[in-house]
Image 1 (cartoon, one colour):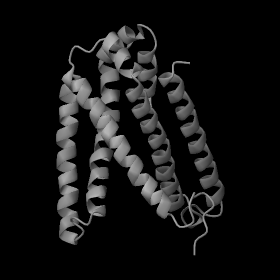
Image 2 (cartoon, chains in turn red, orange):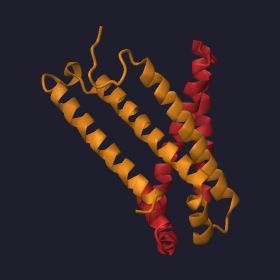
Image 3 (cartoon, rainbow over the protein chains, first blue to last red):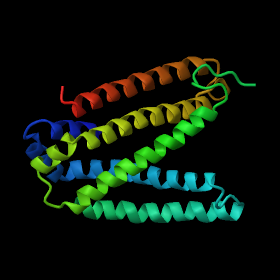
Image 4 (cartoon, each protein chain N blue to C red):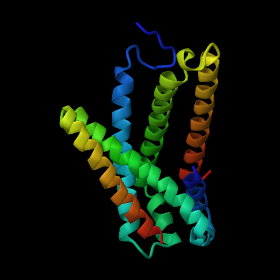
Length: 86
Length: 122
């Protein structure tokens, strides 16, 4: 919920510059990356749920490949998010 | 049949639908916002402020905020009724679950009010 704090300062005056300075700090980057990682994994696993709701991959085999896909795609997305932040 | 006073519907089907509709709203909103941030590397305060000043962005943000509140509540309710039970925690299970859910509602409400204040610049 750090993100809320950030967006709140973004909406105010030139607190934008303060946020930019904040986001340059390594520790803040790690925390933000952690939050992004959690959200990305949640998003990708959620999409898998919606796909399974549509009746795709509902067999035991399908569920196993789906779960593997979620982990692989999540790792890629999380690494990319890290590249973006640094 | 399980009677659950903390669900909105009678059977859970409405929660199931709300959870998925809110998930789609949140997914579209945040993927869109992420794409915008990735496509504008020289994003400054002026552009950022202008984006959130447009009516369509405010409507989309309010929709995402309401979706997030509903999504978070149903998610926490699901976790609490699955894991914070008398079966797992002993006789105090119900009290602990009630306190946990009350704390969740309070937190979600605070985020909702805060979010609306940010969006409408009070």
